[in-house]
Length: 228
Image 1: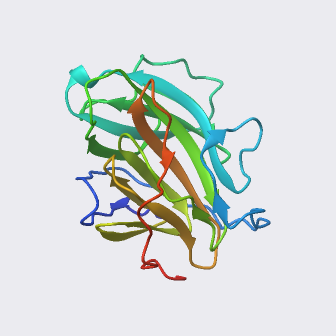
Image 2 (image 1 turned 90 degrees about the vertical axis):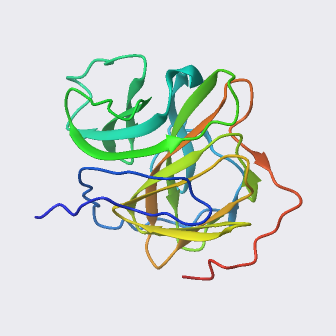
């Protein structure tokens, strides 16, 4: 089976993005809808991987002083034969697969695995110590995040299905085989769209002494993502 190129999305609400390598989305998986139409926040996985929601599966410290940062994603066959490569990377289990993820300079490369994406540069909003939090997110059609703001950039690598992000600056849509990124400090709401389950890898880079995100109380989306 041919492996499609990993395409990237950019929109008026997005920073620059680069992506290399390939992505091989698997067949959509039927799931029961989430118990609520809106998610409150990303939470520690605690065994909930694979269920609708946003689950934190790992993190690494990030130093803003190292220069422009990129999110690098590699897929590997198994974690059993891997060791932690360096402080800038982490081996995670997400969406039933094994990944090497790193937040490092543009030319960082993993010693093994299939290069899926490099997303960036990630624009940090302060010089304080930061943490890169890695998540898996599964949205059934129509599921939406809370309206929220992050204190740093957020990025996605979409593995299955489609999603739509609305901010005050517009919308951007992403589908399986695409990566997207939004700068920090901007209100947003993310929607699962289409008719199939949307699965993605997610990164949020945030000051270590601040939460991943906060609920936005003033801005309200215009419904530009619609139903599809």
